[in-house]
Length: 322
Image (tube, rainbow, N blue to C red; front, side, top):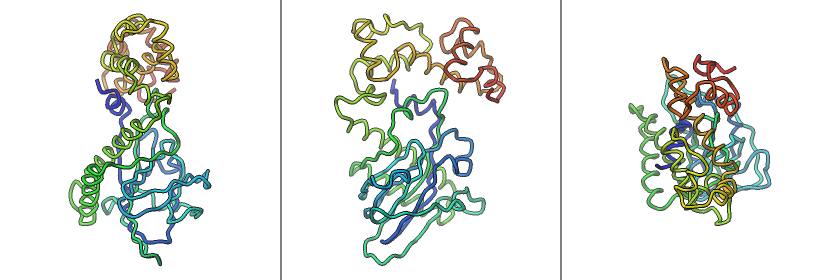
C-alpha cells in the first residue's frame, strides 16, 4: 500500500493551472488568501492550496503576512502554500502588491490559463505558472496537517524537463483553444504536487517529526501501510506491534512521537475519512459504511463519526452537515 497515494485519493486532490505569466523585471504580483476566492477557482473544494512553478528566470516568493521572510526561487523551483495564505511574487525582495480579486474567476468564454505579459526595464525574462489544488480538510487530512505554511522544492532535471514541456504544451493548446487542454493542465498540476511532496520528504532532517517523517520510518511506515491497506481489520495495539516486530510500548511511543496521535486514534480518524467519502454515494446506508470500515455496531460507528468528524453521519448521508 502506497500511503501517500491512498491519502491523496481519499482527500480528493485535484488541480488547476490558472495563470501563465511572462514577465521582465521589475514586476510584483499579489495573490489573495484562497479562502476568499475558493468558490471561484476550485468550486466545490473544501480547502484550496495555492502554488507557483517557475520555469525560467528567478524571483522571490513571500507570505503576505510575513513580508520580511522571502524565499528566492530559481528555474525549476515550485513553491506551495498549503494553508492557503496570501502571497507575493516579485522580481526583488521587499516589494508589495494588493491582489486584484477580479482576476480570479473561471472563464466561460475562453480556456485556462489566463496568459499575461509584462514588459519591464530589465533584461531577464521570467516565466512562471500559478494555480491551485483543491482537497478535503475534514474529517481527516493528515498530509495537510503536516505541511508548513510555505515550502518549496526544486524539480529534478528529468522532472523539470518533462513537466516543463507539458506545461508549455498545455499553455499553447489553451491559447489556441485546444480541446482538453484544461484537463491536461489539471493533471500536470497534480503531478507537480506529488513531485514536490516527494522532494520535501527526501529533504526532511533525520530527527524530524510529523506524518511525512513517519512515512519513511521503517517501523511506523510499515504500520501505516497496514492500517491503510486493511482499514476494516480489527486492529489492536498488540496486533499492529506484533506485525511490525516491536513491543507494544515501544511501538505506541514511536508512533505517537512521529504522528502526534496514538495508533488507535490514527486508525479511527482514517476510517472516518474513508466513511465520509462513502456516505456521499447515493443509496449507501450508514450500516453498510460502518461495516466497510470495521464497525460491527452502527451505534458505535455513529458515535465515532460524530467524535472525529464533528458532525453526524446521518447528516452526511443526507448531503448536509449538522
